[in-house]
Image (cartoon, rainbow, N blue to C red; front, side):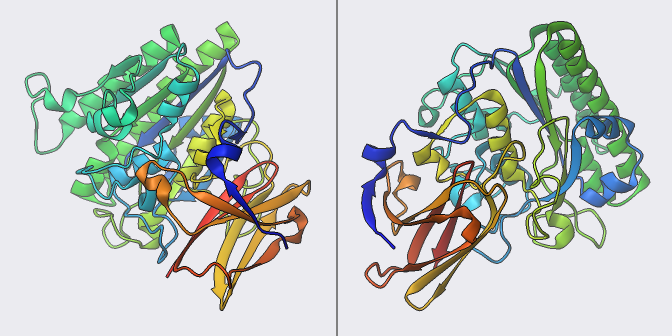
Length: 418
């Protein structure tokens, strides 16, 4: 075993993880959709022809939200919390959005929009949303904390327009806003083809809260499927007529409680149970559930997947913080674990591609959350096929460790908090 003191700032600055910048990205487009509050079992028992059609092109998988249960990354199954986990590829212990008040997001963990705008300022971004806070607070458009990030187009805020959308107890005005948002998104995608887009729809969650597991809720899900069909047709039109390559991810932010279907926020299996539908053609063994029972995809995996498609290179200093694992392309390892036994850290992982080695980095600080840079120790380098490593920490006493496993095709990170 060898231990080398390395400063990320000096050695890793400017070097990038995830996928290298692709030479041909001009025709690549990406769009992700969050339809609020639909547990996986509801999707699986409903007849949803448009989601089925999209999944036949790419795939469908169950997924989860809520971080790792009973660990440092356990995350509330609440709407804005889930949105930000997707946007940043991190759990709540990093992005710091704990509820729908969005009191103090940690903007040091960049969203996919910030990475994309920084690397491709000439390309176009768009948000179509039934909730204004998605753009103004989560993405943080125009804020000094995001370096005055600016999107190219947005269509949102209609929930504040009580003149045209008078609020009713049945929340039908939310459905009307969802429809308006989808109409605009469909037209804009078809005519303008932004390079990176987000569509957010709320009505399904409102029906869940009001009526729980019921015909009203199921009908709202069917209406959502129709809306996805309209977006899908716009994407197909662009692909067929302009030779573009679109990647579409559709998911939800949380499930619902098992007792009534009205509530969420806790850590029950059904509240954590979500799903992903995509047209992506390069889905890997991790997405397909071929890497073991413990490797169910998560909402945080969508961000690095989109980054790969769009040729967004995430610098190592930031990639070391991303909790998600790409759902497309090659992977070196998944399902990493970390535990302490006395003065040793025991690491395990599941090998996917057998090429190359795993560099094991360690730091006892978390300066990154303050916008600073952690100094990592390179503790060891072992063949990826070993699927385990033991690190001696006798001379590095601490109650907090951040460990990063850096391999050829991806990295994973773990914390140990005592």
